[in-house]
Image 1: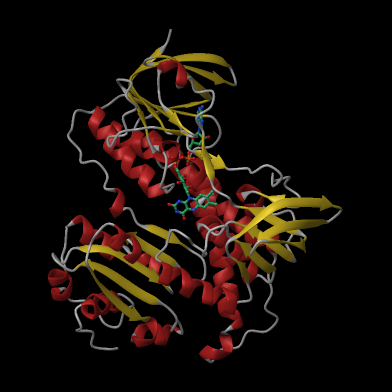
Image 2: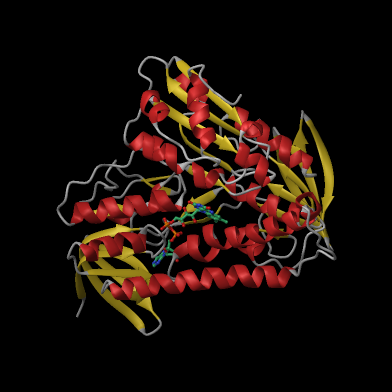
Length: 463
Ligand SMILES: Cc1cc2nc3c(=O)[nH]c(=O)nc-3n(C[C@H](O)[C@H](O)[C@H](O)COP(=O)(O)OP(=O)(O)OC[C@H]3O[C@@H](n4cnc5c(N)ncnc54)[C@H](O)[C@@H]3O)c2cc1C
């Protein structure tokens, strides 16, 4: 007999498990079906293990700067397997925590591969056979995987995807990273800091192409200073693999150059896990590799929702979780607000860090806004100098007519922890006047957020 639930969630990533817990909190009988690992990509192969690796790189980098701080550190080195082991341990700890949270909230976990067979009906292939499950509402939270381009397919030895890069078979000496979005640039930053001679190829006209152009340019300056080679408006057309070498054919400025590497990381985007779920049969629309949804994550099929990476950009864990909460509340009969795309922050944990929310200056102008722009450099901030982190910028973009904070863009130390201040501001629909009235603690990096706002109105004190 089929097990029956109020809500069945397919996938236990940050979209799925958060949705399940919120549903259970609201009194729904909930099941989560997961085919591989609780916690999804984020906890096992994404956000968390990458941050653990990057922390090792950061400590290593700081150890090299010991003298600057009046300290000494001899024989600075690293043990890559130990660095990776720590990262895997952190991922395991957190994925275990998800199992505990689901149990505590009395969510039924079914380990197996789910396919929708009819509206409200799911067939799950488990180790023990096939189970039938029914749900009054079903939430597809099946996530995404690395995109593969023809000729650049990862092989796990010479050419890696993010999973290989998180558990690398060797330390690259000469590394090519294809793609300078968040995933590509974080790996470039990690391996470059550990000493790999790193080249980044980006098809767009700048690295971190979704960020504000000024922020991208400042980040690039730092990457180059750290020894990275950046090739923009460039495309890797072919990889010839022979022995321990890869020859990359790179199209740049109308010519094709060839360069040799011992390792390539392909970070050319992701594709949604939409296959073999029975979605098309139910009439769900798929646009390329993502489920088409409305602002409430509805698929158009009554009782069937899609959240997180499988439902399209931005491919971020916090977007997935926020959608999960909203959909659970909707299913439980509440009236949640739809997520505002321009209030979803984006963070990249390379060195220097990059963080942003809302419209870039360029996009705000293109949208017809007359803008006021504030800028405050790290060099003008006492805490940044004390930390030994004088490079960076906090940029704010306001609607000149209403004072609405349209966007905020930062590059520099710890900005991924700072951006949330502006995100709260946007949620509260704040204007420049309230931000200027706000008291910021001293000495903190957050004072630059205040100064940037002041600067937009010609009132910055320290610059
Ligand atoms: C290297 C890397 C670094 C990243 N860093 C960050 C970061 O710093 N910050 C950030 O916000 N985002 C980051 N991301 C993106 C983030 O991981 C994703 O946005 C997030 O995991 C999406 O959550 P999700 O719940 O939609 O899907 P996922 O986390 O992908 O989870 C989907 C789950 O569904 C399961 N599943 C799929 N199909 C089925 C099926 N048919 N039956 C049963 N189960 C199924 C999968 O096994 C998986 O566990 C990173 C991604 C990568 C790859």
